[in-house]
Amino acid sequence: MKKYILNLFLILTINVGSAQENNQYNQHKWSIKKAENWYVQNNWLVGANFIPSTAINQLEMWQEDTFDPETIDKELGYAQSIGMNTMRVYLHSLVYKDNPEGFKNRMKTYLKIADKHSIKTIFVIFDDVWDKNPKIGLQPSPKPGIHNSGWVQDPGDPAYKEDKNFPELKIYVQDIIKTFSNDNRVLMWDLYNEPGNSEKMNTSMNLLSKVFEWAREINPNQPLTAGLWTWSFQELNAFQALNSDIITYHHYGDVAEHQQVINLLKSHGRPMICTEYMARTRNSRFSNILPLLKKENIGAINWGLVAGKSNTIYQWDTPMVNGEEPNEWFHDVFKKEGTPYRQDEVNLIKKLTEKK
Image (cartoon, rainbow, N blue to C red; front, side, top):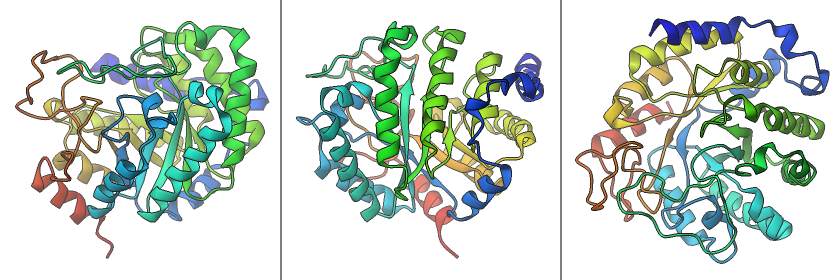
């Protein structure tokens, strides 16, 4: 625990000047006052990381042949029914590369559905997690009992570190952000999910810095962020924290650890959103973490909405190869037909999101 806190302290006390030597990342960075004004204009942000139950990964969600607006509509209705108002949704550059206009039109369809349910969206651009070889086209079937058995990185490995790919990635990032830069249904741009994951560590810094540069050039009306997620990557975390308009982070631990992270991240003086939490078997639950985030006025985006092809009812490190339902779900809130996994949990979410 001491090492954990020391690493986080170093993230917060790193020489700010060294992180701002290149002004291209910061010329359009929001002031603390602007970030605060943006935050108070929104109700308390509560929701989930969303992928429809019929999609195994980002590609299957967004490709033309498997885009499923009916399921999206139904499942966002489940979220609305318990007071959720925000979804965090992953995009993928390969779908854009395959058909830019088709991809953007499907994004518009998704946003129209989400808006119907009074839900705003945090779009995620790049991702360093799980399968490093994403391929357009037919996606694999889920492996029984394996958490996120088909999730894919974006742009993948070694694509993420090859400079020859950057011009094409820049076109993608800037076209997507520019297209929706004035769309109030888009809450925020999460530019890079868990940079350095999958043993990439600091090799992700090049793309991380580039995506901030590309996004700042567009200067959208929505804030930019990249969430802190592991406290050992000091250089990456410092860059993320010092270049984000809104501080976002992931935490799957218990209340005591989560509170310590909150107390330290408050030193940035910016509004905060926890964009991943809730892993029941690790004692990160709605019952203990959601009230904490409400008390601290921190946005709360848990992992998973509806159990489906993502297999996120199973733990990261505890596969159940026979595919039977675990004794306790790891993530997710609803069964496919809309029945809550735990009625007490949805009752709590409703209570805490109830408008006075």
